[in-house]
Length: 243
Image (cartoon, rainbow, N blue to C red; front, side, top):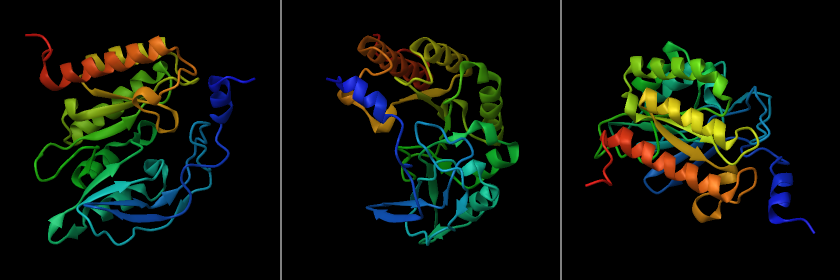
């Protein structure tokens, strides 16, 4: 009989992509949209199709918009889409956009970084009513050896106007593409760069629901604790849990 972990490993290769077709839904005070489909990488963890499709920008009805596109920056029209979104106003007020899947550092240019900042692209938890800082996510799904490319993309975002400590780096954890040891090395570099980290798990697993598939349970708990402490130090400049 197969264990839960063995079954889960087999299911890690998705039979269909997460995102297909245009999407537009109002969720309370937020709006969720998908403007494009496709990604050049065809990674096994998301299985986004390699055929690029542009659906166009739907009518924007909220001041906080979630963008579900898997990899907006790889699209040929990415710059124009970002600029067009930045021009939009709802009830005379600016609209704030969240790249839910993060920005792909491999396609980051200074022109794109500037456009993201000027068009108010921010990260999860941003409330335009109470916060003035702009935040953004950048995905580091690749190897530790990509460190120079990640650093270059982060520097572009800082030059564009984002505060360094407000940049959050996505890291795949508990996955075959990144070992516990390699993710710890990435975390060490993020300390040097003074940027935040978000540890991500296959298919949206969170909290106690994270299965020890490619990592052990101890490694998962240890890494989550290290990421939490890392972000506290970046945010506060001291350890807030020490009197």
